[in-house]
Image (cartoon, rainbow, N blue to C red; front, side, top):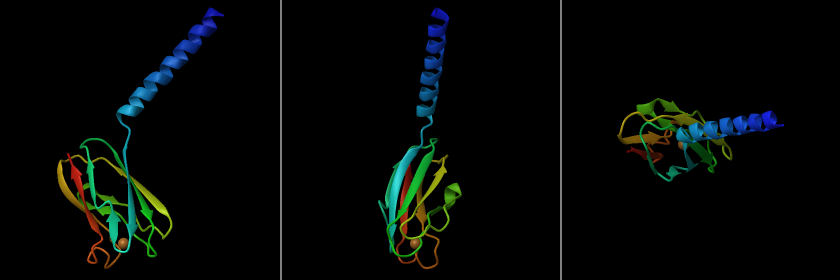
Length: 117
Ligand SMILES: [Cu+2]
């Protein structure tokens, strides 16, 4: 009986430690709505050195993308009504541009700013 209880206690402790470790590296989740021809929000602020998960919610009628050259992020085209996800870790502080790589979209204003602090 006591062996069974201590076994449960150990299992519980393992779960707690795993949860704590996971929380330490949990991604900074950011949802960005894409439409013609903008991102909302167009300015995203994140912390350096911690993973960032970008969820692109395409509420437009054309396909859209999310590209951030500085951190080699390229989501790929997301169809209207769909969402796409990409995760990266910004390893430098500063202000960086992200944009849509579908031809003509960036030029039409489909770009934004990632601020890494
Ligand atoms: Cu676009």
